[in-house]
Image (cartoon, rainbow, N blue to C red; front, side, top):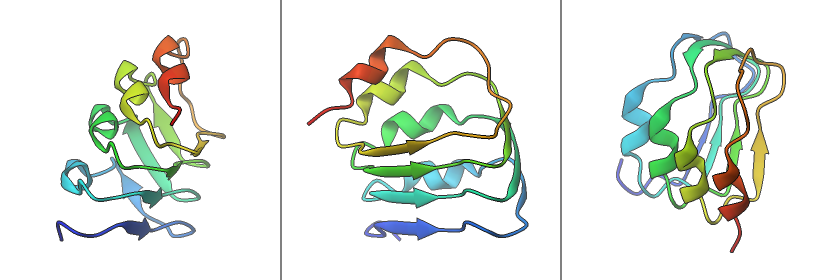
Length: 99
């Protein structure tokens, strides 16, 4: 699905890690995975989704740190990470997420 632009899988009972295959959806501008039971580290490949405007992974059990590559998301308008188990510092590259 190389032209898929929106994926909304929120409010389900999905478990496990966020699949790496989502990182190959280069046209994606909306990704909502909130309110599931996802676990594992926050995926490093998210920074490669440079068209992303909306990212919601809130209310899961994600761990790890927010990758520096998050600054590659120059079109990002909404980032929701609440109610996870992430740690570390916010990357300074986050200020690069502006148009």
